Image 1 (cartoon, rainbow, N blue to C red):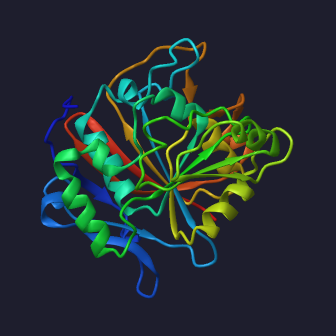
Image 2: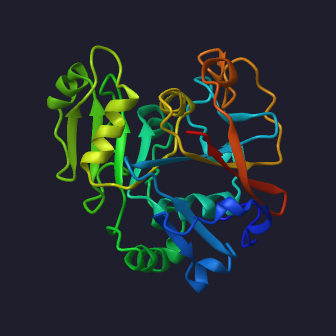
Image 3: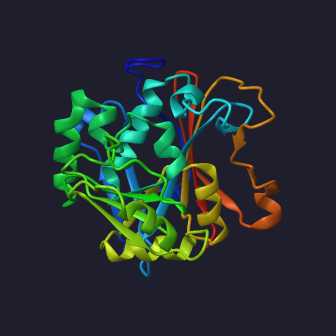
Length: 292
């Protein structure tokens, strides 16, 4: 899985003082173990919201704002957007290492036909280091994966859904649960009918995260799931990798700036604060905190 920016450190260029959690604020993370710190110098800590699970999101975007390719290229995922950036993959692994829960939409699962939503899949050579870090943070061995699907159209035999040591919850509608009830499910998977009619509301997703006991959830998309959570004012921070390529598609490419044709500024009215800027080669790593 080697690619562009292989082995480069994600070096800090600038950060706002608020990137360091204030005294008395509960946080997840801090200084990294030496092996991981060699690739990510300094601290990685997320302030936790006291009254509900904290939700962060992670995306990679091209210079022209594309974060996902459309139906004409169903097998294209984040690797194609990043130009298969090694540094972006390491950043993704770090955030998975911090999280109690990873949330993805069913479309993201279908695109990643061989993907597994764990740090060890992204960085097998550092699997023991990520496992030790999670142990130091008193986290479970692997984050719980929550797959959001209104229709229940997911393959229970997908390698990312059937690993015995990765708990998987499928958040769906009653119709989606009925669809999945006719299929054999792996022992690590359970189905929760939390939606109504044809959608799974953002509040229902958050409540499911809360029931797992999670304090920190990581949303890895796609953009429509991110938009649902953002509309509900449930996204607390965004980690955005800016990759140095221009995709140039206008017809079916998805951009973070657009959700169902409406700009975030028009539909949400939320401002974000830039917390930090890092660089690995030609990749920029931006971190934003949304106003509450």
